[in-house]
Amino acid sequence: MIGNTLLDARKLLRECGVGPGMHVADFGCGMAGHMVLPASLMVGENGRVYAVDIMPQALESLQSRLASGGHLNTDIIWGDFEREEGVQIEAGTLDRIFFVNNLWVVNDLRAVLREMRRLLNPSGRILIVDWSPRTESLVAPPVEHRTDVMEVMRHLAGEGWQGLYDFSAGEHHYGIQAMLDEKLANS
View 1 (tube, rainbow, N blue to C red):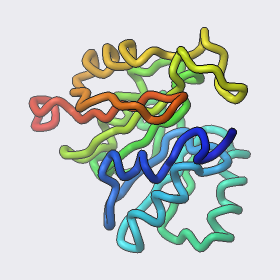
View 2: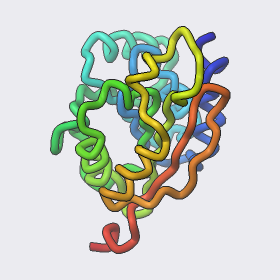
View 3: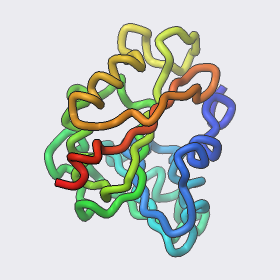
């Protein structure tokens, strides 16, 4: 089971309110661009999608897919989202940031959340979707490398985020939408 069979990208994008004219980024977009391609269609010609990954081969593969599909509103960006200013997008310009199935490869989630904070506009939101520790799947990372939803919520709170809500993102995943605490967003 791959692609939309495991995780319905369009449903997730609707869940977090992606719409025309928005500027969004997918941190850890991977070779398939599972979130990038539908986001490109949803934000339309007046919107912008940033496909961010640290793996050059993932970006090269995605670049080929984008070119053949006419996704002119999408930028491919090499970026290290665990490093301060590691993603070369103008600060405060993003409406949404997606972080899907990448927690198991992150060494410092707090650093990722700080980089997201830098890039989001004051009303922006993040969408974190990851593997449930209780699911069985041949394509999921080993259970000992997965992060429980409550642990993610603790990291969010510790970095000044408000978890708007967590939701089922399918049989094998959980999802969290969060935004900056109003006091932090206005400072």
